[in-house]
Image (tube, rainbow, N blue to C red; front, side):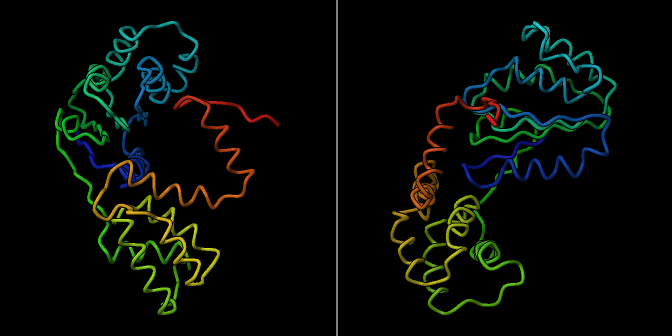
Length: 248
């Protein structure tokens, strides 16, 4: 078991998913489930069972099994399976302990990967991999590749100067860099970039927390056309992890 830990926007989920997609073919079964801030444990356990065996548990979401029954079913399914399971975005110990009860330790070479922002949760089981912000060099590569493409040439000196200031405010956080660079990709003039830089506030350079990340995202939001703003506001009415159908 290994826990990937770090503050929001570092790419914990991206890293865990990349590993899962790369390795799952070497295992008998696997699952990738998200816990989130307000977890529905029964829903999570049902998703876990369905992914482990979609044929056998194709109707699991329609069952009236409670948490204890679902945990028992998972424990009875896993003993002889070499499995890989990712438990993403764990926010508290109690939710993780409930899910952890279902994941039996066998001798088949199974693997469990968790992601969390909370170090105490990460330390509950197994090894801990603490993610760090990108280096200045890697930040520049990501920033310029999104704006100019992978085969980019060195941009104009004025753009380099303002981009370095922008990257300082992004603090090496991939989500912040991707958000801002996507915003700048359509206009390659220093005046526009400077305006975006001034709008970023204090950014994340010395404050790698949720509020710092929110300020970065605000810049991208305010640049959207009015219909898209309304669309996002409408979507925010739905609870976290809610699934809704497209109205065609």
